[in-house]
Image (cartoon, rainbow, N blue to C red; front, side, top):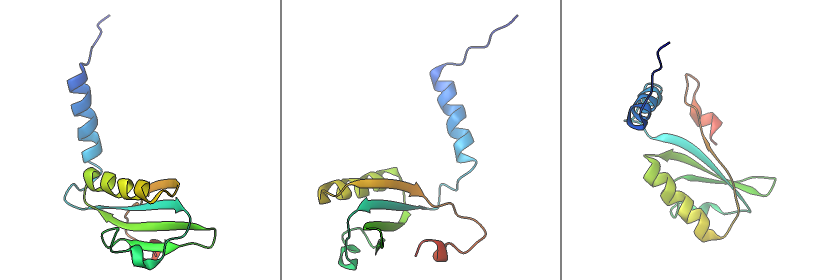
Length: 104
């Protein structure tokens, strides 16, 4: 019986290759950030041009393309600085359908 041991470096490299095969690293990923409480559209500039949409349930959706993880963390710092509770962060899957209808 033979045993194969995978070192941490190899495991990480294999995992990252698998993830990269499903995404296009040249394209920003669209995220929806949901916060508790209403923000008006005047906050669009503060959030770098992302769409700010108050919802009927009292939440606000902040939606748009985010170029990388560093930019996502920057957005989350802005949410933190508002002092409003973060409800969720969801990547919006792109597909053959028109995503402009999904993120309004």
